[in-house]
Image (cartoon, rainbow, N blue to C red; front, top):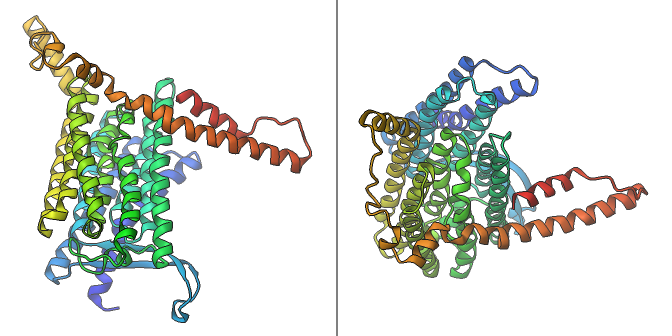
Length: 474
């Protein structure tokens, strides 16, 4: 390995190692009941974000100086079955990192926003009872986000994807002393399971097609946004639809938009980084990563375009009836996210350089929403102070007449006020069917354990209690 390759490999590894080290330090200290002080925790969060961002910037500068469009770092084959050289069917699971114009920009965005919100959270969560728990989950989210951003294989992407989903659901349920946050966190986790199942099925299909989960085997070796897929149109459509379902669940696109307002139960810093800035954009990032599939399957491009437009229309309509600032901002984010997805779908009929448009839209929108979410609590305080100073309530600009039905037909207003009934549909047709399947599996598991143990007393199994909690949530 020459000097340039060594330096690029070192910087690329540090991008993932910095947040992973933070998870290890905070997690181990919590496990051994040696929790760090608020000052030390804050310094660790800041150091991890700065070190990761410096590595991203350094890698980007060196790639520009050495005229390198793509850097691939392989971290070994973890599972290898069969022999490719003997022309047998072979499978291997590898960990690979890829750095190109897409992953570097999204990785830099992840570190910038995580660092910014980390600074905000160290003050916002000051003397909070769950301060240490918050930052353990927050570091887990940052590690998962960076891993998903630079993933070069679908297995590596799945690892980061799961870490982001787990930390998101746990932080929604952060205020566990109240009944609503744990219930909403469980419901969001159930919806995430659908998204994760679709991504896992896409990984299985990809392995059966090529024997491995490398994106190079699916999207070609050309640097992003170029690339020519090596699969047929039907195969591209199947894999693309599974990835679209995964992206829709993670980014709250239709028909999974009902869980979005429930996610506002978490602390403001987590709402900002998850559902205003990064996590909600992870689905759009996945679609950008596999955008060459859209060229191989025009029908998929049409579906992506229509899904984005319908989501934007739905979010814009529902956002007009929200009465709290966090829900209004979340639906405003969803409106722009729908437009970003529509731009990705429209890229099939436009020049290849147009794929930079949704990427730039994503970067700018994430930064704007982060500022708005962290400004929201102080904005409400400033508004109350202003009303006290002038001695009257400030008038609403959107509904000056006080009669909402004059702005919208009554049935449309009712539809928007009920958030499109998507929350009820998610509970009845997504959460409950999954719950019924899990309860059926749980009964058979208990019967099997009783048969093996020869005991018919059948005390409650821990999973049964978890299922009861999910049933209460839905």
